[in-house]
Length: 404
Image 1 (tube, one colour):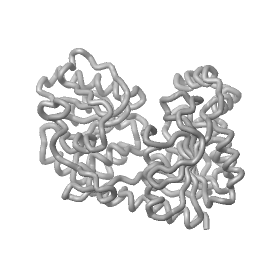
Image 2: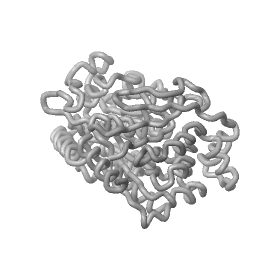
Image 3: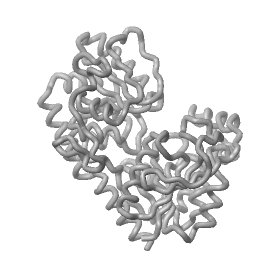
Image 4: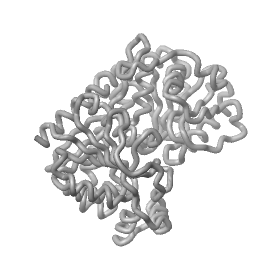
């Protein structure tokens, strides 16, 4: 097949969000398969960095076999953008002009878009992710019939912006990460004649001997508790520690749970970001911060189960990683995606409020046989649906059929 081009605002070892991880894993898998793949991205470090600050040098580089072309991000009016963003986050009405200003003052790159135009014939397809940034909005228009949108949609204020409706309904090809994401897209936009697949994200497959089939990286049991000073059983939270991920409510619920059950398992947090932990939870909550991939795998393996309180996901890599460690999950039922995974896998339970949170935590904490059974079910679910090989084959088959 002709070379494939991915377009994403930030890419590399410092870009660790869900969409960024999914795109990077897919690009590296395609390169190993012998597909010519190029990533077009900005010089910005990651989502948390200033969007007009050039961290990387412009030009071409290679990362794990993937050709990366970086372009300077455009200057922007951050004050204007932040003001409109605040209105959107608070559910306030915005004018069409404000919505267009929001996209114009988002992260953009004129140089990158010029490259798409100049090299349009060099690529079979241009895959854009995620949906909510100016670079994607203007990029899919530049790529026209060759545009493929991997939107990573959430049911959030941004998805209802009028410019998105006008532009995304013209995109002919979509790659969704889950069935609920696809259903949200079809409910929000008129996509009845569009070509699409539901691919999921590729997850590393581990053999029982503890070796990663893809990379040979060890999945070891033991060592995490000792290294991070965790005494006894624990529940795991893995991901960015920010309000949008539900971490504050999780801590609030967990504090109530500890009040009711003083011998409750500890709660271990791994991932970037900072969160305020109540003095009452001293010794009960251990924030290990950002850990290596080896320590992350040990953390999953030694946990009783994972809690993912996020109300908005288009997929959830950490849920699949927990399943690969044969550990069940507890998820927020507000999130249709993670709830769907919990039900279909038979590897998770879900809650909508504190009484349900209390019930599911007690159930999984006290019933080892249930944890083991659900962990095995989750493990099989990933092997049947989301190994890197299965996801890669599904996407390549789709691209080859659509862009001959």
